[in-house]
Image (cartoon, rainbow, N blue to C red; front, side, top):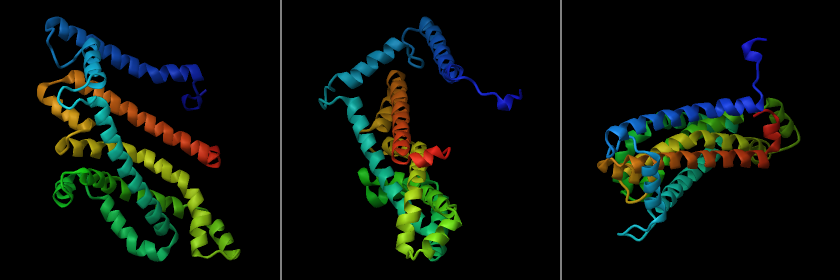
Length: 271
């Protein structure tokens, strides 16, 4: 049998999926032990005990200055910014993408602008956002919106244009007007595709969030990472990075589950 036609069993697939993570952990553990054996005060590759102590201090002990549990405070602040930014971007993408995809007149006027906006490096305009919107929450949210909305707009518009032409002809034959075509034919079919677009945009959204928090913020996961780097506090930085990764995975899987529950017909089609 050709290799391209061989599919691993579920147990084998699980083993193969876990294997790279196990190897990374073993490699890190070995390197950390060697460095700590040579220098117990080494900060570059902290051991499990050091990182556990740091997590306990950041997540389960009140900060002496603020009286807050810093890790949970940072998590709440970051997730709030991320949620608002991605939510606004997805809403804009749905409206603009639908109109660009279904209405040729709108597409002629809006598509070039959306394409141009999607080519702008979002981090390059971060200073402009800070100048225009200040150093508060709005500039951070706007960076996420500007960084993710144009790409999602283009994706939604493309998905609308890929809908079978027969459907468009039939619904118009039945007497549907433009509004009904958008709301009854295009919208129901594009919603699960929008969720997929949001999932793909989560990685860039986290990047823009961390960058904005690192430059101008008083709380947040990105802010804390760049704050403690001054002290080479890898025992804090590594758990924070792992925590961000876990949050991203959980959010992605929740969106995936929502897509399956809300639109079973979409996933039944092999998407």
